[in-house]
Length: 302
Image 1: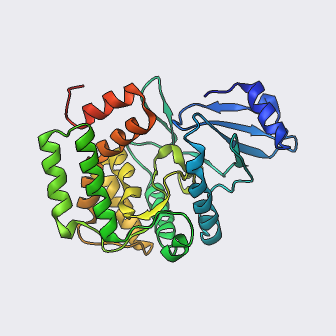
Image 2: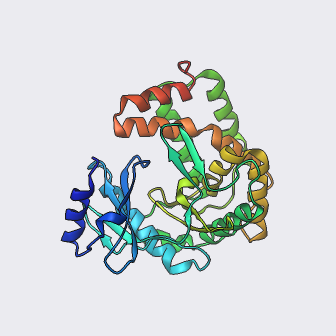
């Protein structure tokens, strides 16, 4: 569901948040939420998230718990602090900085705030620090909440199970399936530790300052304790092997968990992205995503 200015103002008024209409900016790039940026009467900037479908809000309970946990323990980056949290509205004071990139559906790609052909060292370095701090939050604290907590063995078994479920539902091209199996079965590839991950690190969720330092992460829908490699995949897809190596180096320097085949593992995890597309196609029931899933799984040509 997409709402216009009038609808949004009606909803926020119910929660005693009075917005200045002429400051409202709409961001339609999110699949689950319509996002609105606006100022209240005192000039404070807010981020509003309005659910597009009914299936979205129940899943935010875990996100809220994850954010409360992150806000309690991290010192060097910002995460949203949900001041309003109801079935029709999530609202928090806007984080510092701007997203590193925003999806433009007309071009089917990101409009970037950084030079992606010459990514500033500060971006990789600061993101490495952010991820190292996030992944070091105690898993025991997460286990006290409703957050999914995987041991290394469970993370691996979960991926295997997800692959098999997608294969049963859609099928998987032979070459891709063989690649997945080789990865799943190689012990040295897999981390011996798990950590609390953001789970959906991409340019649109990564806030940066004017010097391309990462200052915060938004949209924590996928937060859980599992394979930390999930938080590195976008960097590899966006900036290639060189970008991935720079991020891993910064992460390791900042005290993040490292193992010898970390880079190779992340690359193979990236090759498993069709699993997520297929899962989303099933949850959303949108034909367009079913088509995308079949293409990504190597079942039909694009």
